[in-house]
Amino acid sequence: NEYKSYLRMMAEITDAIIESGDEYAVTEDNCPSALMDKVEELRANAIAESPSSDSYDTDLEIEEEKTDYDTTGRQVYTNQCKALNIIPVSYFLRHMESSEIDMPHHGLGPKGTKAIALALINNTTVLRLNLSDNALEGEGGQYIAHMLRENCYITVVDLSENRLGALGAKVLGEMLHINVNLKEVYLKGNNFTDKDIEYFAEVMKEFRLTHFDLSCNSISERGGMLLGPAIAANESLEMLNLGWNNLRRKGAVAIANGLKNNVMLKQCNLSWNGFGDQGAVALGEALRNNTILVTLDISHNRISAEGAKFFAKAFEVNEGLKHFNISHNPITAPGAALILEGLKKNGSAVMKELNLKNIRVDDDLNNTIKSALETHPKLVILHQPHMEGRKKPNPIAILKDWLTHNKHFELVEVFKRFDEEETMEVSKEVMFQAFEQAHLPFDKRNMELLIDQIDGYGNEKINYKDLIDTDQMKWLDDRLSLYNKLQDKGKENIRSG
Image (tube, rainbow, N blue to C red; front, top):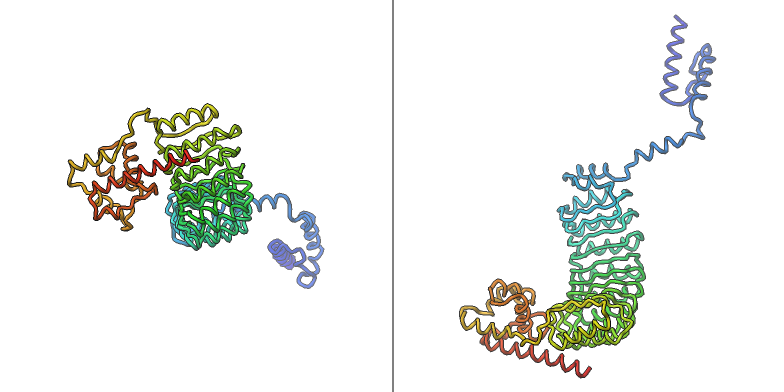
């Protein structure tokens, strides 16, 4: 009986050793002396069979630890969705191990963005992240910015059309001071103002991005003055998109001066701003000095034939620009001819594509185009069809005749209907839509010419204030007179230039 008792005690002691993993748990104080020899024998066997403390971290255990570590963030994401009471996005779960997450238009909102951002903090597979048009707002921008402070694998991020606003600009600007791995950032259409640009202008001088998109925001003169010096100082950007903003006057000049001194930028989009002739002067000077820039888009910028002179002078010496878009500017045929004459004088020019769309090609311009192509046979010139010596159509005269048979039609009412903010001005693009809906008797080409004639001043907007108290027939005659004077002035500039 005593022996059985000893065996039971020994079994309990042995279980204690196994459970605690401590071979020193049994001592002479808590074990009968009769069993000590057997315990010592068990202890020796256990030590011999167990790994030494020096070799405890074996390769196998390290491998098991790596296997257990979630490098995708899948568990974090599902836990966060549960905590935030939102439904997980199946696309995100399926692509967490992919190199690209392409999730525009998913309606994530701030909550959905938070779950994704937390999941991506330690993710090591995603390299490109597109969350455009997801209603992130400033709060969602905070979550993404925090994630990008920690994640060093993502190199491309698109947060366009998310109404990030001032808060988003602040946190993203701060993040760009820290993250040195991002290469491309797209922030189109986020309601950024001149004040918000302060957060980007300073870091822009030092960040390592190669592509940066700030198009379709509300950057105007002051914002341009902030960005100009940043563009000049930056040594990494290869593509910059500032299209669809309100850059003009001193802001436009500052941007042009930045391009003049930049040594890396290859593509620049400045379309749909208000550079005008003042900005054209500065851009022309920039192109005389910059041989790195390959593509420049300045379409829709209110540049006249006078401004075209400065590009002509630049193209006489520029040996870097390959793609130049000056379409939809009121430079007229004489201004376009002047630019081509500048190219003809430069035997070292590398221009591949010149966009002159929406500029009417008369006989003189057509001859200049042919001559330029003889000098540069590989050059592609995009332009309107040649009118082949025919008398130019006069859409205003056609419209007046149509109005005499449609006396109920009032131009001023059409303008008012599409002038939602009651500014007494309507853009040419909106006017085109209005006239199309009114079923005026014009094809697209003549409709564009009609609107050019009504524009009169060549400023891309139609001011109809003086139409309210004036007979619409007389108003149309006055507009046509202004248009013809602008055409004549362009021809005089060519002759004097």
